[in-house]
Image (cartoon, rainbow, N blue to C red; front, side, top):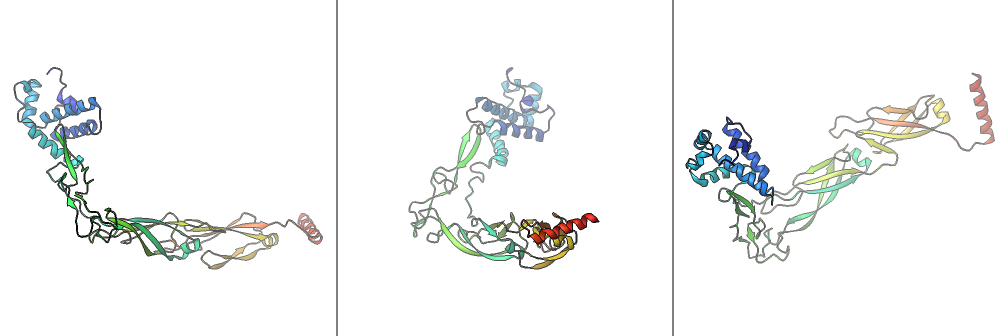
Amino acid sequence: MSQKRDYYEVLGVQQGASADEIRKAYRQNALKFHPDRNPGDAEAEAKFKEATEAYSVLSDDQKRAQYDRFGHAAEMGGGFDGGMGDVLSQFQDMFSDFFGGFGGNGGSRRRQPERGRDVGVEVELTLAEAMTGCKKEITVVGAAPCETCAGSGAKPGTKPQPCVQCGGAGQVATQRGFIMFQTTCPRCRGGGVVISDKCESCAGRGSVERRSKVLVSFPAGIDAGQRLRVPAQGMPGVAGTAPGDLYVDVSLTPHDTFQREGADLATRREVSFAQAALGTSIPVVLPDGSELEVDIKAGTQPGTVLHLRGQGVRFVDGGGRGDLHVVVGVRVPTSLSRKAKKLLAEFEAELDAK
């Protein structure tokens, strides 16, 4: 007995620790050193058993009182009676919180029919479609319950039989030390049933590939990277359960002359030297087909950015529009006639004279 470590030290708590502190400390030790988390680690298994033994004493008020008075010597006198049955019962209640329950205590719940599967697709829109909003017919492909066997996987006229190994629970209980654990049944693979005569349409899978067409509405202002959820347009469920949802991820086709940043648009427009010097007005046609006039003030320099508020993309929530940014470029002629050169020389001389 002298070689045993103090139970409080084993759990890492003070001697006056409360019952909740002892319980919490044991949970932490058990999770850390449990054999399932440390396969083949003899040291971890020994620490797990040591922590279990400490908790079996310190969690019982009577045993704890005897231990506090006599230490490990209380074990020699038979003071720690009651057997491990009571301890196992306590541990089953505790471990059900984080190991999913034990066989015979609600752990044999049958699987309930699940709703249909969700389906995800990606749709590429043009900038014009994103600005104005549009509707597109989308092909949805996914696994749906087989209509021949109604999703059971069994040949018509037959039905799946409860698995004899797990009794239809889909899980089997195994014991390791003092603890009972549940694992997926190896015979039915968690389904709870075994199919002897498989449906020919789905080869016993219970599902087949299904293609369907769904009309999806894209709101004006939608942007790349955003996702639309279309309720109940995924795959149908089994036995009348609700269908899944359709998730549409949006991407945008690059535009030739416009760039989009959120709700703002940016474009580049070039004017002649004379137009930049004298001022002018140029038309700009937006991707959605709308046209507006942009004023170029006299003396506008190359690279000037004109900001037109409220002329960008509509906010997807309908609360106004972003801005349009027009970068002004100046075209410099690369080939001049003799007369053009003479006029430019005279123009340069006139500027120098000022």
